[in-house]
Length: 268
Image (cartoon, helix red, strand yellow):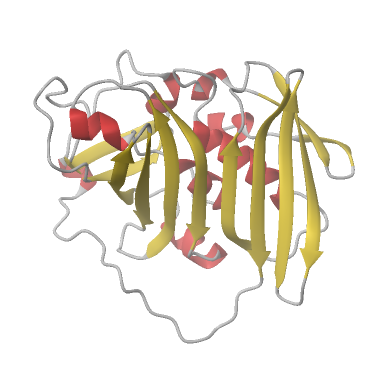
């Protein structure tokens, strides 16, 4: 089993109730990598027998640090309409609720479509680039093959503060794994905190809430397969202990698969 599939594995113990366990393969500085927590919450709905359609939006609120060990996830549909379905999910441990999430699932229709935002241009092929080192990095970083074309957070890390926090990169699971909705939810949180890049120094941070919008259907994910994705990210505003950052995940051939926005707590 792929390390990612092990990390998000859930066992049903009652209707809408699942048991899971944190994974040593996706450890962050404090608790598990947030992206894999997002994937776990989404997976609770993906395997629910009452699910309708595919994910359109996922919001995950990190209420407390997730301790290493078992956890329980509940998922319930609070409203089902003709084409949309609204879900509420909770993850809890002995300390109480640690993660709250909502999701919108829907059946998509073949109607007029357009993309206004643009994919990064003139990206060198990932095979021609050097993978960023993962030595001494948290284990979750080792689970992703990242190749930066702009804004490598840890190059010249102790340099002077810079004027923006933009980055562009190729990225895929390591070992390679076909893309699906759960792994897209996880990889969409791969962007290092923008304050690291803006200030060029480590800062105590913690994501409070992240929302991911899925623009891909199952056919687009199948077409992507194990290929590298293009990821871009930027900060918005850093103010009084909180900042927000947005990101985009593009297919290898320039189709927008997901966008994400999160708010992060930081200390000076």
